[in-house]
Length: 507
View (cartoon, rainbow, N blue to C red):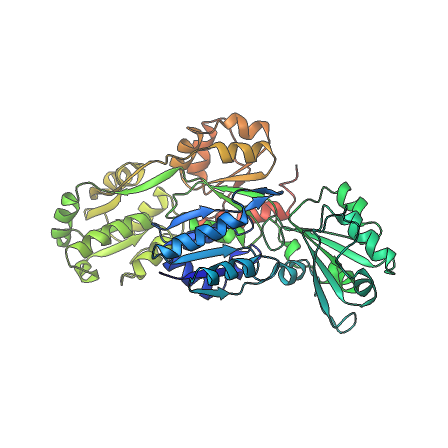
């Protein structure tokens, strides 16, 4: 029999997952997760892990609690390590105590890994400290899920109303009238500050400040629905002064990232740091060559070349993978000059022990050729490791300038087999504000699955990494709303952020 780990996933921001929980997720044979546990956490799981979704949404149980208990016991009994991933903290209104009792009864070893509870994190992201010397020195966590038809409440409303504590109600949106009426009937002034925080700490984070008396009406007016926390107390008055997370320019705005999944992480990180809800829709996939023999042959004759020009991070990774397969390293480039197109490519080379001899200021063929000509490339032998299918502008211009150019395919690209349903639905619901394109192939392959008319109809903005990608976008009848000044991923992210800050994303 193996072990079950009851993991607190935190309130939703992946950065709030504990190191201990991440480590267990990376080793578990089985992951069982709830609705409120951010699916991004599953990226930490082993590729071969068994994944079970057992959450509930709006009272609709995917799997009843007793069946969840049975699943945990059965998986542990079969000798598997189980990560039971629960939103927030397992023992704070998470029914983790009940699951632990069942595991004890079945003789299953278990551990509890506490998580950051939303009762602390969500108000903090909304600029509400749940304790403050000027307002209160205690806090109460309360379930707001009592049945309002019960003849008598099991909660001590008088104690809550007169304690002076900050009150944090879980799962209380549907019962807001019941909660506020009980608080006021027990003596709480109706003008006591109150707040709702929905999807706290996530990219969909949203808060609403009112009073105990007015909150039910305000919540209905602004469409606040679960999952939301209801916070009551004087500390709520600090919301406007201390709010920080809600100032992020892309908060709540959906951005589609069309880069290959292997390359998407940098752009996703930069956008998510500014609050964006990132939808990964890789338009292309990177595949290793079925037959690496031509690459091995070129490596064996590497000393014949004067220059090797790497045009992408993928080119570096795949070329060096074959170099490693031949038990060679950076020393194979002795006496050869190396060029990198773009800072990310230069960083990939540096990580492998090579500092490029040439890094152009602008990453278009004309600038690259001009810089190489100044370094004597005319008449030189040049090797370009790259994708099998790529633009021929660079090798053609180098050849025209007198270089002896050999193009070496080191990987293949193909359109990603991606279901567009989620993107289409999100566009139609108004959740997506931008679609980003980082190459001409991402444009072509994206529109092979999603009609450009959809973006036009719903006024979704497009962002391109440079003029070549923008030109390809124009072939589909779209003029890019955002074009990066420098043809890099960080510059593209900065351009999208700048557009949002300028109000250019307003619908």
